[in-house]
Image (cartoon, rainbow, N blue to C red; front, side):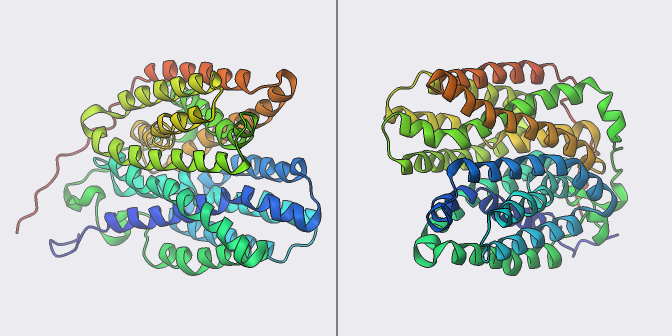
Length: 414
């Protein structure tokens, strides 16, 4: 049992998760930045390179349940560390690529597998093991790394490509993962508080009774899991529809190719601010009510985008959409953790993330197909609007939204 002189280790875990998510999302989402220099160097077409991005998305989704099982068996830290190392090695290898199949392997497969093991799901499980009462707030704080990673790594990728070519950019990103992120995971994080004789939220270990965790089979028989997951997959559909197709939509409206990147950056900034605000509000408002509000805001934003015909409207969309973008992820994972417990969250969240990515892949394909068939993106954006309404309705039907019963906090003497 830890004593009053032992500081609670949870804040360090949140910091490590924040940095890990910065690196993981920054590297994985930087793939599109390399398309132009790879086309210039090797003559590979946009459709061919986009297929590598689609492969990345599918592999990431398929490996979510696998990674979840590994986390439940071995703990988050070794899985996250191995995955960070794999992403770093994949980017180092990409700095030497000369053939198309190598890009498919390094970015489409290896980076995606690594991202599955050190992205949102894995770090959500890690933070959830250290917090019960403060879970939603700490998940939101760590998840801000997703937004900051985009704000930092996407422009950094462009600068490095100009300064040292795509090989230099791949090399620097790989080194950053191996030299900065990997040591933090290995030497600072711990899979659960009991490893340090501590209890979640910094409570006294002797006074803490861990809540029971459900198995994946039990979750799959629970209607609450499916209602929460239906809402989550509509998030994936709308998220990747916007991320992958907004730059082309901007060009359709007469903007330059760089406009889409600036709009997405603005959305990432708004999302980071919203993430912090949601973390402050969740204790008073509750996860379910916040989620319902975010789904409705995102739905209105996509409806507005479907009707947009001028460039300034893209920036207005980005501000509103960003508010309801990434904060859905920590709130939804926190809600699932409350319902089924943190110790089995790997397998359960892995299944939810797999379905999330299935809908994301459908959105990427369908968005392009509808653009070709109808001559505009309006139908695609309206489809996301309808699905988000369905996601809000499904979330409203989640019954066990209050979380497990948590013992009262023990006030330490001294």
